[in-house]
Image (cartoon, rainbow, N blue to C red):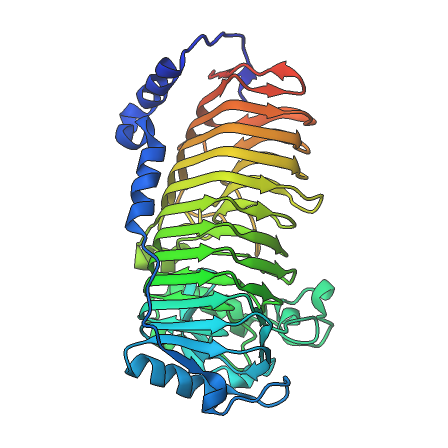
Length: 480
């Protein structure tokens, strides 16, 4: 049942508005954070301290690395990282030049530092990437190693002004997705063959232990580019990342992660810029995302595997970032089974004719999951294709996605948002009658152009406060 407009006036002062927010959500037990969410954000920032490293340098050249982009320098990287970690940590230096390598596995107290002019070229031979514990689209498995990987490590970093080049294109990695636009042709194997992605999803549903979900060579499940798996105190700073096989930056089950000043330019399939999953205390700031999928997508596992892990992603901060091409600027889901809590987005610019949405939350009744406490402020949106805010609880991919796990979304606040062109809608929200989307507030939002102010179904307590769309003040819809 769709909500219809009705007329009402809001004469709140700033104090009353703050009280209004708290009162609206009091029944959900979230009063404390909703009364002053940005104070909570400051507390999270204080808790996330970037790692510090010993003042020791280990140049890969001293361990046999050769520039030129022809010789595979995997052993040189491995030796330099081992020596660095064994001796108390420091910087593993990649000097100016082009250095070809297979996967790089980081160790405790190691900062992989790319000097200005340095470029790491990653092998496009899938056989160069051994099996490790990782994940694919929200399901854990044994698969090709990510290009840069740290497993259960502490105090690790990737820094510097250099370039990380995955060298993925339509001739390698990308065509594995099975889409013709990425180089796949009839007769080529791909991830959608029944023995590959489908078998992985079924094995998770059947409770097969992760160690027995063995894929890798011949399975066509692409590896993540950078993955911190089970790490504490991790940093990625200043590097430029291009041409990823799959998800670009993937903090997985990690705590205290900072992504600062990173540039992502990668337009392949599923090339999300940064995907924190089952992770806590993550700050993404001063970054630029120009991607083939979501710029930032916060995850928490998928379906049965997400319920097995049962771990939230929480305390995620996104600030001072620029979003260009992508399916969404800041997205939650669709792999959100474990739940997502306390997300803060501020001072970002989102603008591209190829950016579909600004803020997006997506799930379905196979995924389920609870998303709560999402706060967005001070955002400048130039142009998006579909809408500023979309809450889609019927997201569908890979065929039938219906089940018995109804997702829940509540406490979404957008304030001080300026939009030139929202595309089709200001707000598009579709929830379930059995479990409506709850508590969505837009305050001080100005949308110059939208084909329609909003389209909502099964949304409880949608509030527009001092919000203007197409030059007209938007009144809150009355719940029927």
